[in-house]
Image (cartoon, rainbow, N blue to C red; front, side, top):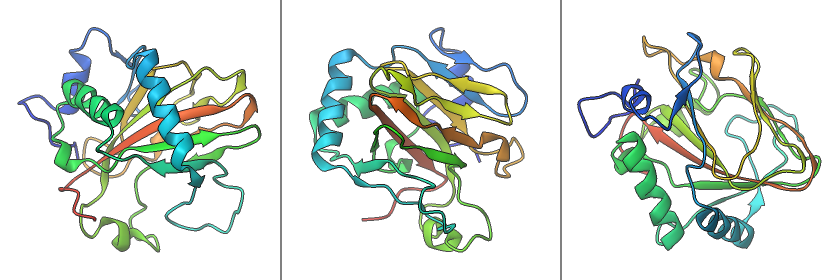
Length: 215
């Protein structure tokens, strides 16, 4: 279930060949980081767009926990120059045809807000699986970027892998939501931990198995 890349290389191979990208040394998941992926100016422009249109976050499969995801979110306008620049940088990095990508999403976490441990794929057989995967299929890769420093808290913890990433302006994390055999990978479970002091801004870009067909 690797996202379709614009080259003979798979996404993971393309990332591994980039000298600025580091792969986490674990067999449990294809997980990478790229420090200073975005410039400070582009981070600031994306933060401004998030602040302009943010709304309370939701989750696909409601688990009854009103405090499961307490951040704010927004879908960024693809016509904005900052978003176009971001998309170009992502394509240069991962080679995934943009037609497989969901709209760029921004998130804002204030003090006390978090996104409890979750996966980005849609659980096969879950109540909303058909609704969210009928058109474009399952999510393949996640590309997430921190946009600002956080005074305290706000890390991203992958418990099954035993790794916690601290927010750094412009730092990108990315991972394959599937195992090599195509099944979803529960080892990608991750926790957007509570912000203890300050505010955290994040950009997320998801890719699908098929062309994004939602309007």
